Length: 463
Image: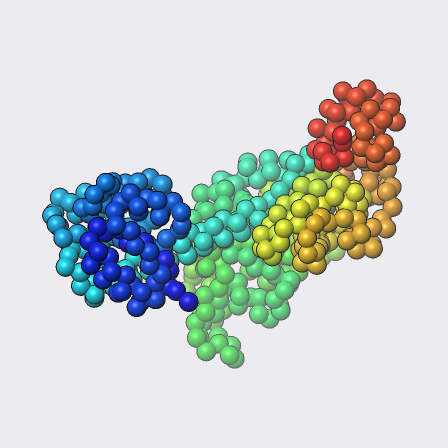
């Protein structure tokens, strides 16, 4: 196994062979050429981890060769080596992008040191670029996606409230993306360079949640063997996201209310008052107004956290977003799982549109991940879908039973979903021929095409 490939360009045969011997012993695969012109040819024919070139060569000299390399591939690492070293030559080479400059006669230790530094630099640079790319992919993957009318309202609210420090209460069923909304608000705000600290109040036992939020002093209780900083302190300057706040005990609600009102608290067992500059965003899948009426949630805390309410619609009410989200997840998991699933067929998309999605976006995401893992190649068809989705009656979209939440429904979105179902059915019955589909719907062809475009219906359905 080699450490990498190196190209050596030098018109002096003894120097070429000496360099080749040194580098081969170090585990590198080495190709040698006797001038810059041959170097350019070799550079174009193969990829090298490092290029070592003499400064003075016939036909194309080292500086011209360096200039060509850097223009073609700015990331390529080049070491200059010459028996005619001058300060000006070294400065020129470094300004043009050379990594290092070594004088002849060639010394083993200097060559090894310079080459190893160059290779390690390249590895660190590539690893850093890869980490940045992975981070960007994760950030892009965790962006909220949606074009339905109900989601446009959510995005509009996010834009308006991001740079305010007012408390936000995000409501919605499990799996609708409440934490994503909290993060979107944070990263659009002036606090974006400070931390956002999430706490799932329903996932932490009640006797531990207080210490998790406020921290404790050494000896405050059995097992408190050292001081511990709580989540409120960790969020200093940034945002704390209290998910499932409806599960918080009444006694803890009182203490959280004080933090919201006064922006200060004491650690458990401590006497020092700690001041915090934080924004508080909360979320719940419960009906907190009912919880207040039933005396399970403090009324004063409810009004403090509900300054800006954001209600996330369930996926079943975001019909026009299902196809977009499914394709988004397909692209992501294709890359993550190193697969090349070509597409989700229009028929399969139609079944996804019919399904009720009780687990919302999280359920859709998990489904697409499973399908990508299980599928070796080709496309995801209806036959690949779980039976519960395959067997969902077509009436579930638009014309089926409409579930009204306490906040009502989005009329325009439901009408769009019904319209989309009618168009998809007509296209299926007509074999995808636009003229026939238009006749089935008593529309002219131009109107049909306009509706297909407006509703983002996959082109695969039409001829």
